Figure: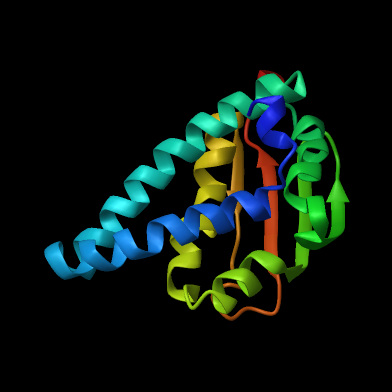
Length: 161
């Protein structure tokens, strides 16, 4: 992520993206169907998120869990999410998102059904690009009706970072 891009919060970036992509997505669904459109979206978002993760590691000066935890400042900017950290060690980082303005924004725009594809699904590929030895486990998201988004990052190979 370039420093200039980080001057704008991720929430604002996602809203701009959603406003541009929503009409395109609707046309694509009409042309190729919902299943194929979702598959295309997942592939594009996964590629972009993985690239962003690699760039994030460079921006943060490393790819350890501590670096990733520090990077949350980009996602929490403008009170975009409220988080509750449960555990943070050299090998584990566990937190819950207890308020998600991303989900609120997609809902306000009438795009809640796309929020998962445009935001939530990025998380797994982002961490893979950041450090392929860190695994994300998540069982629920606010976007999909959960009470919280439960993030559990675990270093698979502690000696690799």
